[in-house]
Image 1 (cartoon, one colour):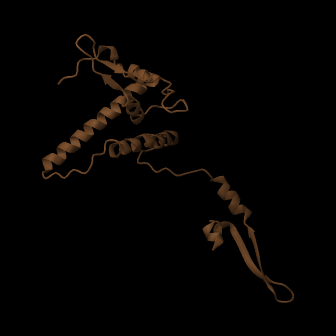
Image 2 (cartoon, one colour; image 1 turned 180 degrees about the horizontal axis):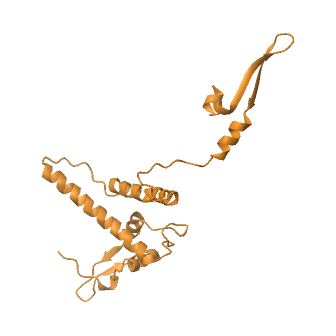
Image 3 (cartoon, one colour; image 1 turned 90 degrees about the horizontal axis):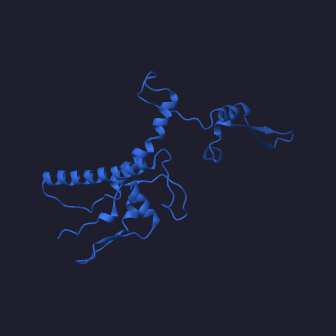
Length: 189
């Protein structure tokens, strides 16, 4: 039972022996050939792809596989920060309209992320997104989290409205998004 639970059944060899007085004893050892074969393929994984050898070599297949995380994160964004509370709609047109609105929001979400990453250039990382100030690749979620804390101070007749920036990372993100906060307009009522 222990051998099966620890997954060593394939390399464990055992048999029961009896000594001169007839007392049975269990004799066991690990098969070194099986251990060596297991060690030779340790860390290898099989990737199955519909691509032919002419379309992609093994290195390119691995790169495409490693890029799968970005796709999965986009699905998580679709289900996560853009999630809508349950809405009971009675017509198919309204369901389709709701899905279109969510897809448009996801498109804007992804375009914001793309614009920030493009503006960063080849480095693709920036500091200030996390409290420990480590350099990370910005995501749409991080960008909107930091920009979500911006406030607009409504002005008066002689004092124009201003965006109140409380942290340097907000200013950096606005610069990367090419947003000029000095040209704020009066809110439309």
